[in-house]
Length: 360
Image (cartoon, rainbow, N blue to C red; front, side, top):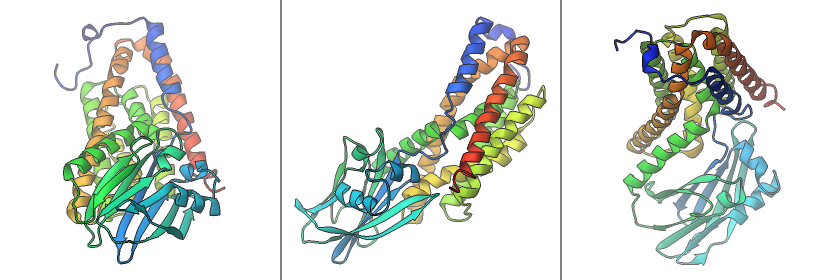
């Protein structure tokens, strides 16, 4: 089939109109929870650094997760951190204290713990944070040596919640690559606003060439700003990026509602994709993706690859539904406005949640 031609009826296996309508409407109504955001709320980080005479552990929690912690906030979060993080050398647990706590309504809470260092060669770090927070919570644990080198890095969960590190050892690059690839996939699958934006874009186009152009433009755009933000070239606060992402969803929903046919929207997709890239970058900033240029570039590449794998998988699931609509103009005429209204409603909720509600 030549690029740019409409998808013919004969390549689509028809299903009853009522079933197609139910599938698409259900996907829009239930596939994108209104309260979900671009960040994965079930993700935290623990950065452990070896220093002369002491070991410093920095625990970072998203605002949603900090609210779920036992005790909720304030001094209780300090107790939660001390009770959840254990550092041992050669099997001897080290005493620790809270050095500082910084809380921001947008980015969450950062708690710094300091442990008195003892002599020994085998460091063990245990974190009960994934076990004590919401089910499915994950935590990226990084152990950094006194010279700045990464000794080990692992993604923890409720079952695998401790790591050992030789104080003279080195990090496995292969393990880190796989972890950031998986993190990228999980992030896009949990980023309901990004997925809804992509689905709304695909709903508005009717040609195969336009679909390819739309997905490609979105991929290139968010890859550029993800790299720029992660490398520190450009910084856009989450308080700005997140409402704009929500506004992009509303705009696309309105455009789908008022325009009967949209076959060239790659420029618009590219522009909004730049903003969505800053949303992806927020996940990496919360975790910290390395201390050297080569570390940052490699982990950024693997994370972005994971995002693209997840995004492609979702797009492949959506295409059969889009084909069914394209094969049935009458069904599309009835169903497209309903889907567009659902998109506008979800985007509007996110705008309110990320502006007015976030300020309180």
